[in-house]
Length: 257
Ligand SMILES: [Zn+2]
Image (cartoon, helix red, strand yellow):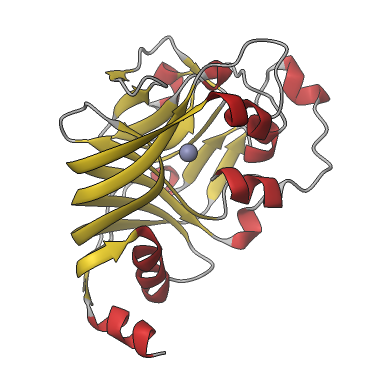
């Protein structure tokens, strides 16, 4: 309990009156579902150009799980397995993406020293509604940041855990400054999305990034945007119609996220 109180004392919350955007913009939008991606539906029909119309912020992947996708301020980035970062072309396509039009309604400042990703998660959870859907944008200098990206899959596709086992590349980044973009989602969204925290990283110099496993930071600014709800657009790829979505893949998902 002492730890929790100490964490809480380190946080200050600035609640600002928010002039909301048009109603439709305040929902999270997702293309396909996490369980389909887990099961190996690695291709989708939504282009990056179309995705940009659904949100200016978020995370996802590309067809063939060719790298990690991050959207910030309307720009879509791909972090490839070799660690390189480039802006995605509007004609690229995604097999799974989770986005929102981002407008912070709360800003949290956390001060360390020596905050870890786990500690940051704990403190954010204390301040937010456990059943809310939140987009999170975290800016900081990170003494350490561990991320991954993956090599694209070749047909016939395996499951995502199997693919990652052989094709995931882990990056140990030192002393980078950048932005973590993603979501904190409630348990009831399991099977359609990633429950809990799911963040991708982009260094300010656009030279590194990826799906976040862990980090350390001394001081962070966390912008929080609560969504009113969410919309799922089903993947129209033929594989989505055939894949077995009966199994509960929650335990497997925990291992790879
Ligand atoms: Zn991810």
